Image 1 (cartoon, one colour):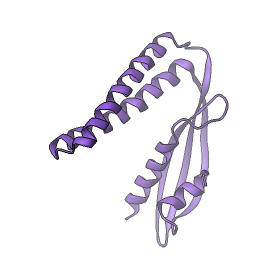
Image 2 (cartoon, helix red, strand yellow):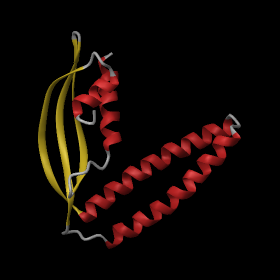
Image 3 (tube, helix red, strand yellow):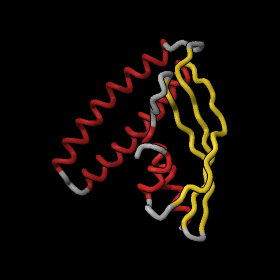
Length: 143
């Protein structure tokens, strides 16, 4: 289940999608797309950095070695993304930024929210994990 309803049900099988609206679909240029990719990657890098710091504090050697490897790999990727931003075409169509408005319901509680996601020029969702995170946070605000 990779559709929106399937993502909602993964959070809680009793959760229901009351409403769903595509509020906007905006064209994204290559330059903007690369900046967004870099931002998403930077956020993930920070998350792994925090995991490494926690592993160091708790002296989890296997985790420390693995997380250092991950960060080294990601650092190279981030450097590559920086280069792609510099050479990106500010006019070339790269994909879309899509804004969705939705409302969740569980028994007598509801939560309205917005999620932004990015679709490349051939229709692939770029940050599907972020959609799941936003749905989860909406659900947590319902409690």
